[in-house]
Image (cartoon, rainbow, N blue to C red; front, side, top):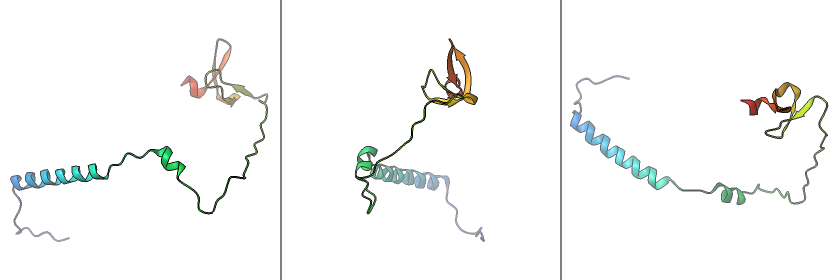
Length: 99
């Protein structure tokens, strides 16, 4: 892009005036567009078009804890033995809780 070096340049006063006005207009724009939206209310009103899921049921097969798994004494989640970080008072602690 070519630059016209003969074009009049703005002085520092002009730049300050423009930037103040620009900042004021930005502040007004931000205030007018900010709306406090409750995500829970928004999610309740959201429906998939043509999807009636009222008769659907989830079926999950629950397995007992396996021999190579442990239950963390802090978060109470079942982890594989590779996630064991340490034992505190004889109780296993996973890597996530130990960090």
